Image (cartoon, rainbow, N blue to C red; front, side, top):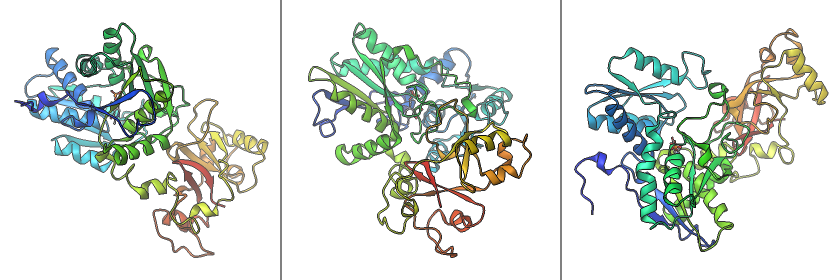
Amino acid sequence: MTVYESVLDAIGGTPLLRLRKLGAGVRPRIYAKLEFQNIGGSVKDRAALSMIRGAEEAGLLKPGGTVVEGTSGNTGIGLSLVAAQLGYRSVIFAPAATSAEKIRLLKAFGAEVHLVADFVPRSDPGHLANRAAAFAASTPGAWLALQYDNPANPEAHFQSTGPEIWKDTAGSVTHFVASVGTGGTISGTGRFLKQASDGAVQVIGADPEHSRYGGGNGSLKYTEGAGHPLHPDSVEDLWPEAFDPALVDKFFSISDRDAIFTARRAAREEGLLIGATGGTALAAALQLAEILDENHTIVVVLPDSGRNYLSTYFDDDWLTFLGFLEPTTPAGTVRSLLTGAPAGVPLLASGLTAAEAAVELYARGLAPGEPAFLVLDRGESFGTVHPREVVAVVTLESLAAVDDAAPAVAAGLAYSVLGAGLPVPVEAGASSTKGQGDAAAAESAGTEVVAVLVDGRIAATLP
Ligand SMILES: Cc1ncc(COP(=O)(O)O)c(C=O)c1O
């Protein structure tokens, strides 16, 4: 057994585990790199230690200094634990939607946490990154980590993750699979493995289906920590400098459903409690394994633990609400109110005027009273939408009630979402229902528009 003199020495050095059950039906060997065994619970401990050491060496962080970052999760946890060990204060700005578990973890490791409103445009001083930068600029001795563009982030993986994999597989690794958030893991590890193998190792990106990295349309997703959506806060589509796309040989595009259910399988079949980015990477590794043979060895990164997501990916009620799980009692649920398979809902770009929106809806033959959703503009391709992408819901009648030249959003009606698996909300004039949809259900008889989620995306409106 290794004996450590400091918790910082215990960062990295994670084991590889052969996946014998999940990999039973395929020919290559699949090894998982268990990054959730890091001291702060994720792969980001490596980047956090490397960035803080880099700042010390550059003279940017001095004794008594303050480590600052805008982050929802694992990087903040890594930074706060390393900062505490080295005697620095840590101040983390996190989106208001950050899970309760992660906020508590940040505080447990000694961070001061400031919650910031979600989805504020990048140009707004209230945006997460601007709040963190302003705090750092006005606090003497503060240093802003900037993980997305900090070269010490990928360098951590070039120095540690890559060499560990090369040594532990005795140079037999042929394919490296990782999800991409900042890109630090895939870029640093990928660069090392390509150098060590004279370019032979194939680097595979596992990407949420809608993420821009793998060519998706930029819609939001449920895999926390991986992928690159288009949103007001990233509408310029700036990719992190920590990510070197030239190193990626191929991307596999993985749906939220596949990511979540592969993570759940890993817990039950392999005893590995992992998050959905690990599920994303594992799902990609299993698809890849189908086209390889016994001469190949795949190493797949499992970035963090499922303990961070017990109230989400591992909670059946959460999954049922979002329409990822079939309701246990099909009769009497919202799903049973939908006529046949959900056919999707009419979507319009959010920037239209009321007149333009009305013309579009007439052209599409929208029935009076049938709602259309104004959603964040992602160019030509809308596909389906995540509920947080909806800017307003309109009908022909509500558009007619405002000025033609007004923004169509001005005609917005009240809107809420219901899970397909919830009990039937409205019984002939009654509003007595159970579950998270109560408020929406009670109002749905009025002007409120109720959207129904299937696989976490808006699939239908309630008739
Ligand atoms: C859970 C999780 N998975 C994957 C990643 C992606 O790692 P990287 O930022 O090195 O690309 C992150 C990064 O924040 C993460 O928190």
